[in-house]
Structures are given as structure tokens and as C-alpha cells.
Image (cartoon, rainbow, N blue to C red; front, side, top):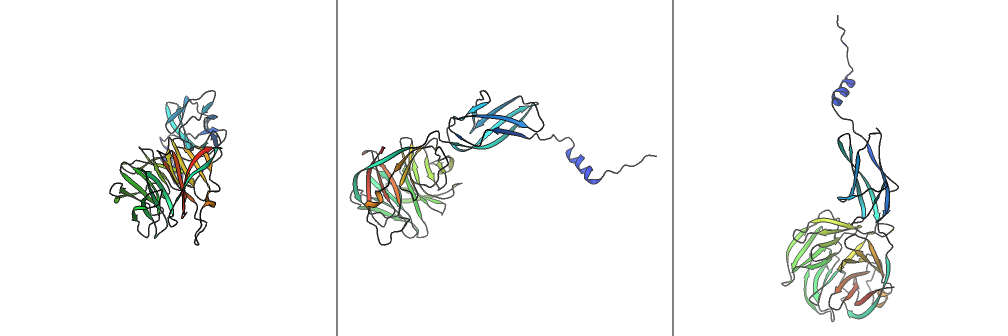
Length: 345
């Protein structure tokens, strides 16, 4: 007589679900820390709980293969910040990919810069400056605060207004930039941007934000538009589609840096006001490294404060004049516009 063996249901399900399934190998990337410097060589290795024999490993960051020499890789990558270190592991005719997040900071501390005032010009003390840019010797300005946000163009020497477009009272205006006959302007938290014809000075379109959280500053390098959002990221937008295609992250040799406000691109560098600070960051537009810091201390003491002055009336607004080769800076509700030269200390 055959004896019927009854398999417990739990055991049966375990055998059924695992029949023919391969066991996952738990590979891990080992490094001597999580925070490193640009161009630093770091030790890397792969471990696994099952002691599988690894045939070879290919490490990469942002798609760039990092060659292993004496058990170390060199972090000679282009963009800095929080990066994903990938390892493509080949073993037993099988390939596995594992990842580990690391932070790659700038190789050197920022250099220190100062400024020299060349000229002082009048500025509307009811202009809560968010964006500032020259086009054909005319100064364009975008302002903030709900109910008094606008886009304006004027004579920088006299503050005579040529034209102005007022934003919807519910919109808080932000940074601007001019590219290929169009003016682009951000809103702060409405997640919408505006496009104007620079010649006719009228609104022609709008665009939506992507992954960026807010709208702060704008600038461009003739091929891409750079957009800050208050985080450590500066987004690169395609000027044809306004899609956020990639980003850089702002870093020093010690940490990530945020609060880049108004932006201005000059010769491969992004000059950025730092919100609430009397300083300008000089950022490598390719890597995100802060290569210099301009101490703007003392400038705010040269303006006349209004009765409604408050802590938000900070330095903001930076425009480069390509012919004069000088920078023009001002602040939120400041009554002066300053033409300055930036120089190393």
C-alpha cells in the first residue's frame, strides 16, 4: 500500500515559487567613504555574500568608464555633486549591475574676489529686482512680489522706462534671460514661465516647469538656458522645447551649495547672487564647482532705504555689459544701480 505524504501548504508554495528561479547575488560596492574630491583616486572593490568569483568589473559615472589602477579609480568626471557610481559585474557568464551614491566635491576652495564701483545710476526703488540683462545697450529687468511683478526695458543711465508688461497680480515674477529674439521670464511658485518677443515686446507663449521645484534665476550660453530653483541644482533647458534636459550641482570643496538666485553667464562661468547674502558665486558652468566668491559687502550701505524697507530687500540683479566689459548690480527695491569691476583680492 502506498502512503500518501502530505506536504504543508507553505512548504509547497515555497517549492513552487522557487522552482527554476536563480538566487540573487547580493553584490556591493565598497569605497573608503561617501564624500570625495574631484580628481581624487579612491579605492574600490566588490563583495558578495556567496563568494562568487568575479571575472571583471567596469566602473562608471554618468556613462563615463573609470579605469581601475591598483584597485583605485580616479574621479576625473565632468559634472560634480551627488553622483551614482555604477559597477557592471561579470561572473559565471552573467552580468549584474549595482550602484552606490557618492558625493564628488570641488578639488579646490573658491578664490576670493572683491569689486570696484565704476559708476552709480538711478534705479526705481519700487522694482523688486529678480532678473537683469542687457540687450543692445538697453537694460531689461524682471521683478517680483504679487501685485507688482513686471517685465521692463529702460535706459540704464537715466532709468527712463521705454516699455513695461505687468504680470498677473497673482504671479510672483522671477529671473529673465534673452536668447534668439525672445525674452524668457520665470514665476516663483506658479511653475510657469513666460516668453516674449524682444522686438515687439509682447507675450507670445508660456512654458511649464519639469522636475525643478521653483523658478529663481535664468541665464544662457547661446545654446542652453540655465535655470536655478533654490536648490543646489542649476537646470539646463533646451531653448526650443524648454525641457529640462540635464543639470549641474553647485559645490565647493566642502559641501553642496544652494540659494543661487539671479544668474549671469560670462565666458564659461555663471555669476550668481546668493539669496540673503552680500556675495556673488562664480560657478564653472560645466562642472558646477564654485571657483570664486565675490565679497559684495558694503554696497547696500550706499543706497537710501525706504520707509517700507525690510530684511528681504537684499542684493539681487546682475547683468554683464559685453561692450563695457563691466557688471551692473542692484537689489530688491534699491534706489541705485552700480556699475562695477570684479577682481581678485
